[in-house]
Length: 577
Image (cartoon, rainbow, N blue to C red; front, side, top):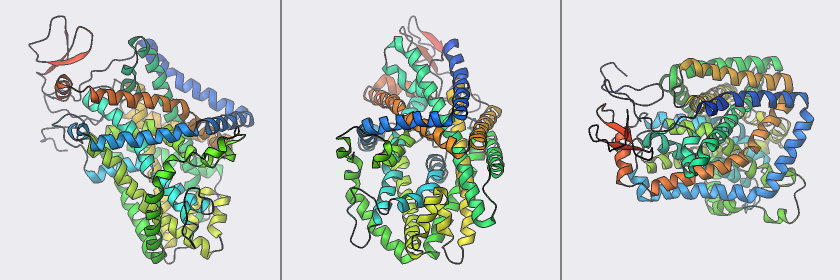
């Protein structure tokens, strides 16, 4: 932005006109010194202890986590299904209610910080880019012969795998991200709270419980973010190495993994240092362009007629079966106690993926909230759910249909590749594309790298907020966070190997069970805030987002922040700038 502009953007994404004040103004409450110390010291100590335990006794820890996963799957599948439905219902309420149309993030005069292309690119990249690279071929192939609920068309049994992939990576998953993001966005942009789970959640609790609960909530968010990013970093290194092997012949070894982690970590650190506008925005837009190139090339040079026909048919099957899939708990499986999560289809798929989404919600939703100022709640929800879901379905429809076609043509050759190494599924399919298959191997390998860089970049911003709020995190602090996460990933992968990475990731996902309760409290708090939004709240929202230094905020007799003219503070009130 030029120096002649009347408005400048800060590194945190807030606005600060020359001579004005930064908005949104801070109205939250900082933690006491003891709570702040716990948040800063407990996560690294806990993570070091966890990693040491896993490395010392990998089999024992894996056994405990296996039992925990069986417990969660056997006893609480119904809860995760209801949670996903609750998320969809809240998003629908925000779209169709008056409050969704009237409430704008950042106040009625707030302007959008990013255009639609940049916004969609960034939220898609941090939300699902790397997951889609991994599963867009693997899931349709793995479920081609086993897809409950779906009544497959005669002669096309394999369509069920595509339909379940649409479901697991489409609208419902994005609604689960969206409902968390909108809670954080309204709390931050409209009420002036820090961009943390703590301040979006605890004021629904009794005052005596808010301090301790805030520390616990923040610790859960920090732990989920660090471990989720570190284990994803490990798997991204594996998949990137698999891509390199597909067109260079370089073997995927621990040395290659380490080089990949260092390279991706360095690129992420550079992006994090330069900020959202100059770093992540550029890489995210590059992602979008390369993704369009990949999907369009597979569509044009692959089995075009089959892809068109299969997408048409499976889209119809998805919409026909959406409600049944959304409510499916596999009730007969609960007739007796579940001995192992592996005995449950949901344990392999829906519960696993919903737990994954919940565990990744802290950094995905936190980043989406950060970049969404200026949009109404209705625009926000539609933008975060409907548009990405359509992109996901087209992506999976094209790549998954091509994989099924070439799997049949090669006597289940792609199925064999997926069974040997799930990460190789996409590359095995691309090798079958005539004329430009080798070029697409390079494009897809680059996408693995850039999508993960954007995910780690988004996670770094969210983690910096969780750790440093209400203070602003500096560029070098974000670089240190990237280096720390890369170090954890390197240790897990090179010392413990893929089994240890898988164990830690599964443990992180099991952590979604208690965290889902925190999220439901936060959603309830947002609904309470919106329903209680009266004239005084609207006045406060305007004042919080007014850059005029003459506008002051005040605390009333109860210590709550309120808007008031600078010369009309009520008796007993204290002014806050």
